[in-house]
Image 1: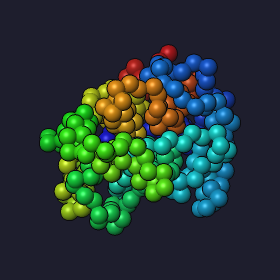
Image 2 (image 1 turned 120 degrees about the horizontal axis):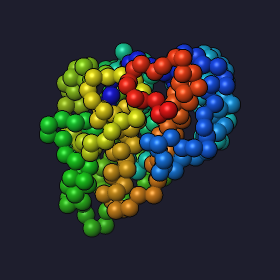
Image 3 (image 1 turned 90 degrees about the vertical axis):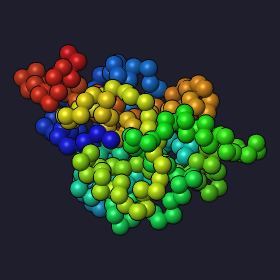
Image 4 (image 1 turned 45 degrees about the vertical axis):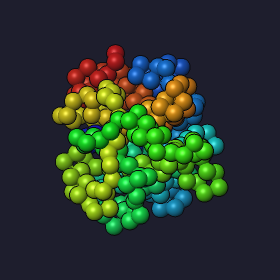
Length: 280
């Protein structure tokens, strides 16, 4: 996961742009997401900061502490994941800047956030639960699927258990993901409850992230890594992909548009974090 530090948070551009400058070109999908199938996003332009009904703190699109959607929840897509996602959140990682929180908001039935170290589940099973992390020993998503397929019974189904809300793909129960800056991941990986898990990695992709980091443009934002994992898993199972998990990037792509439009509308305030990032 990418080192998420400087730059805009879940409230919009850090410069606190005016309402007009936050308006996005909603009729033109930004280039990195041109072929994605998103639910309508135009209504997000009209959101304002309001108190969260739980914690009463002012939030704009959602409360990243209480995981509550603000505005009209019926307009926000809900993504059903085929395998449950557990996010292990390092307490020093600001939730206001963590794109992993998007998954918790958009996948309320299949995603949970646990604080490190106190809340890590102690029932992880290395035969059913896997860690999404690029370790040297990590297998690809396709290799993981083939491994699960080889050990499965002929009657095993690839489906979601709607009654228990415990999705599964050929015995794959949970994907565990670390939400932390890179230099703090080692301490989490050494935790006894996690280090027994085998790793799985995604292919290399170029990030669309707006926060500066020194690890290269293949170092993804957390929500990008989550999206590509589920897309690759879907392709391994079904061979074709038709946007089933595109809405995992619903907020992320919108914030990308907000940032692009804000800086293009304010040329006197150049974006200095990443050279060539703003597509004028």
